[in-house]
Length: 448
Image (cartoon, rainbow, N blue to C red):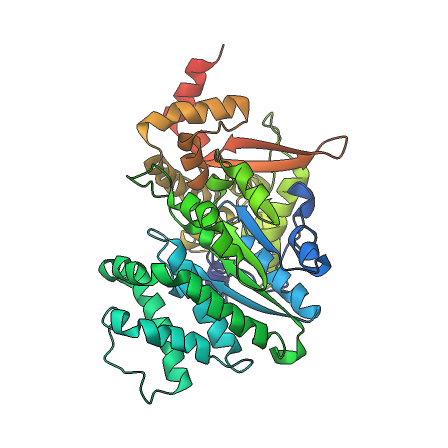
C-alpha cells in the first residue's frame, strides 16, 4: 500500500479529474476506447460520415442514444474525420449557451444555428442580408434582448453579437423566452431564406481551404419532453417532425442529436422516412440478455478506466493497487451498465471517498449506493411494474411511460450481432435499479 504522501495526494487529485463525466473527449485523445464491437458494430464514420462523403446533395441525419453514452465524443471524432476530407464543420453543443433543455422549441434551435454559422463564417460571406433581417426585427425584440444599443453606426461584429444576446436570453430568461419566440416565429421562413443565401456565398470561400460545409448540433437529445395541453404532442414531435422541413432546410450537410425516447415513440418510423438517416449509439454490452457477464464488453469498460489511469501512473497495478481487488474493479464496471458517464461518475465518486490508495470495496459500494438512491428518486410508483416487465422480456413497449424510462436512463438499450450478422436490439433495467429493494421484491413476486 502506498504511503499517504504528497505524491499520492497529487495522484488522487489527477485521477479524480481524469474521470470528469461531463467532458467529451476531443478527437485523437489517447484515452479514447473504440467500443464498436461491443455496441452492435456501429461506427459513426461509416454510419453518418459515409453518407455525407458520398452524397452529391445535402444530407440531414439524426444521431441518438442515452444521454451520457458518448455521443459527443463520437461526434467530435466525426468532425475531425470530415475536416481531413476538406469539410468545414460548424459544431456546437446547443445547451451550453443557446437553449434551455427544460424548455426548448424549434425557433430556439434555428436562432442558435444562425448565431454559430454567422460567427464562424462572417469572413467568408457578406453578412448584411442576415443582419438586415435582424435589424428589421429589432424594434420588436430589442427590449427582449435587454440592450439599449442601436444598429445605427454599429460595427458588423457588434451587430452579430446581438444574435448571441438573443440566444442567451432564450436560455436564461424564462419570461423573455416565450416573448422572443412569439416575435421571431412568424419570420423563421424568411430567416432560413437569408441564411441560405449567406451559406451559398460562404461555401465558395470557406476557411482553411475547405470545399464543403457541415453543421453538427449536439446535445439536443437533452431536451426534456413537454406535452402540449392543446394537442397532446410533445415538443420533441413539434421540433423534429412537425418542423422537420425547416430543420432540413439549411443549405449544407446537417447532423442533429435527438432524444432516444422519440426514436422509439409511435412516430419513430416517421423519422426514418423524413431524414437521410437516424442512428443510435447503444450501451456497451457488459451482460448478455440472460444476465451472464459478457467478457468482451466488460473488458472494454475496464479499458476506459485503465487508459485514464495510465495517463497519470503506469507503475501501479489496476486491480490490486488502484482498486483493492479484481472483484472491486469488476463490481464498479458492471454496475455502470455499460453507460460511460455512469462509469465515470461511479469511479470519480469512489476516488472522492478514498484518502489513500487502493480504492476500497467500501468506497465503491458507497458510490454505488449514492447513485442507486438517485435512480430510486427518479422512478415513480407506477413505473416499478413497467421496469419489472422489461427485466423479464428485455423489450420496450411503444408507450409513453416506457419512453420516459428510456429518457431517464432507467432502461438501457444494447445491441449485438447474431450468428447471421443481423443486429439484435434488446433493453434491460439499469443495474443500479436492479439492486433497489422495491424492484427485487417485485421481481421475486412475479417469478413463476
